[in-house]
Each structure stands twice: as C-alpha cells, then as structure tokens.
Length: 208
Image 1 (cartoon, rainbow, N blue to C red):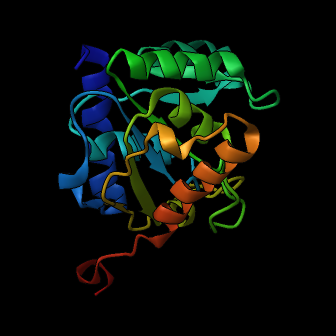
Image 2: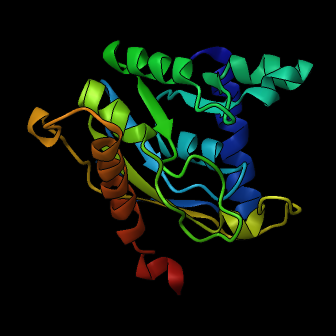
C-alpha cells in the first residue's frame, strides 16, 4: 500500500471498529489479486472506506467531482485512489479510467445504484457497471453494507450505529452474456449484479 493509503486504511478501520462496531463476513470471497470490481449498495458517505477496509489490498474509488474542489479534502482523496466523476453528466471519462485500471490489473469499487439512497432501501441499478463489465469481463465481488444509513444518512448527522459488511461469492461473466453492446444489455447486467447484492443476508450471529 502507498503510505497515505495505508494511513487512511488504519484510521478508517480503527474508527469503524470503535464507533460503529464494524464487522465483516465472507472476506474469503474477495478477489485480492488481479482485476476485480467490488460492487456494493450505497447508503452513506461511509460506504467507500467501509468497502476499502473490508479488502486487504488497495482499491480504487469513484468520488463526486465537487469533492475535489475542496482544497484539503481534494488533495487527500486524490492520493487514496479516488477518481473524480461528474454525476450530473454520467462522466464517461471516469468510466474509461476505470476500464483502463481494470485492464491494468487493479481493483475498483463501484456502486451500481450510482448515488446514495435517500431511504436506506436499495434503489434501481444504473447501466454504468454493466458497461464496464462488458468492456473488461472483470469478475464482480458483491458486497452488502448493513447499518451505514442509520450511522450517517444522506442529509443527516453522523451517529454511532453498528455496521456490517457481508461479502458474497464472485460473479463471472462471458462474452456470450453480451450478444450486443447497448444500454439495454448493460442495464440488465447491472440489475443482475444489484439483485445479487440485495440477496445477501445479515449473518445470524450478528443479528443476535
């Protein structure tokens, strides 16, 4: 890990465990080497670092372009593998960057919903992740985050609440899954990925 990434990793893991009683399950399913997409539901600003600390090695993230306009924050997140994306335009340049990163053997975090949920419920998938899978055939590791909405909802205040990340079995796609390359096919694949995320359940031992 790069020094600043390692520092952020350690600090994030410490805060997550102390304040949010963070636990992760199914980490044996994570693809730690080579290209892979970490796909998770999105409820909170906490989600990217939560996915990051669930993995052992570095991952790359998408972040709203406006965050990079803040001098200190922008300088920091740029050094911990965050990539700017303009959510008002569905920034194709950012998608191309992710595709190149995957082709170079890196791992990226993608939220199929595109933006944080206002209710904590899983939203409709957007076609972006489907397009990236079509162009790279990178395996997808589904993850479901429980509790981050209660800990820091969109437009709300941060508060202590238990957070759990559960990892599912990797999904692998073939060229045959993309008979044509268009938005409809990408949307279908995105929905398939999100359905796998939604099907992940909280472990019984954490419910108790």
